[in-house]
Image 1 (cartoon, rainbow, N blue to C red):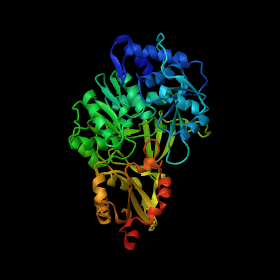
Image 2: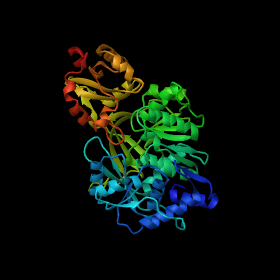
Image 3: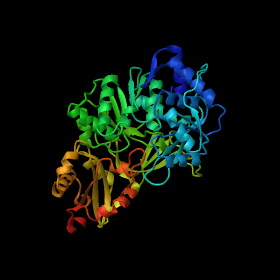
Image 4: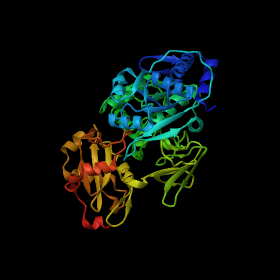
Length: 494
């Protein structure tokens, strides 16, 4: 069964008092969850579409999400970490007049010009009903204003059915949610899959609410206490957990069986070290426009350096230029307010390759390719992944610099002391060693070291942490011409 609401009805009938979800305030069983979903659905039934949802992850958030599906409403999850300007654009673009919000976000909703309703509603009698309505998920691209991806029950059911089989989800699973539910991937893995499998979900928004190395410490401590079997991470969270586990600040629970990591490339040395420490990393690839997950490494069938094979039901092909094209039932029909429709086929803008056994590798974004003075195409993500293999580097962005390349580096908490005392020669030596596998024309000739979190503080990252490359290049234009340089004229022309 791939319909989350029908699966919930089955649990209510078979084991109503089994725990379904836990957050920092409460634990809710399936019977209570169903009544609260029904109560929320009744509260949302007569409101004009679309309706906003603004709050950190919690049981209240997922009750609202399921209640919208039960009421057949169009909902726009509003990431609480978006800036006011981004949220204001979404409210205007989608035509949202009403937002269900947590108590902490009510004033913000009013300031943005919408009507705020309390997130927590009452209970009502539960009647089993399949999912109807739609989700409009706004993605924060590297350029331009956020765009609303329209998804319905068909897309969600297809993704969930494929993932349940791929990750071998089962009633014994205990999922730890640390990423926000407003991200489609976490809603799928942290809400829908636990219900479909009959497992238990723990919601821990306090992890990413921390700062610096404390994020990884909190993640490790909560995982040790909850003893999850599954979780979803971005590479930076994985890197922090690996570092804290490697130095003994946290322990790794032996309960973990599947950690999905996506959103950006995972350096192979980082993944290998994670496995050595007992963190079973499985790299994946996807995008909101295709239901959140297109390919993933699965238990017992992981191939390092790849994002696994495409999920069942996805037809994934490569265009002549290497662009990944996805077709299938999980593909969106299009963006909100856009005339163009996908017709079940999506040109992702990502470049990739398949090996002989069908494992997919991601090479980078088609629109981020850098052309050197010699006319060579370089994917910055390729070089950035090499740089991020060193735990002293928390973030790396490769930029065009004249006819060559520059590497902008943010130190990690572990690496800050090293960078504070390193001279230009030592920094360039580190960059050269990390990129030794790259051809000469792809070697960064300049190194720019910035303070930790500098890109985030300057607003140079998307909401999900990806670099806004054009904005970064403009912001650091003066340093591109004065940065540490070891690039020879000969190398620039290779």
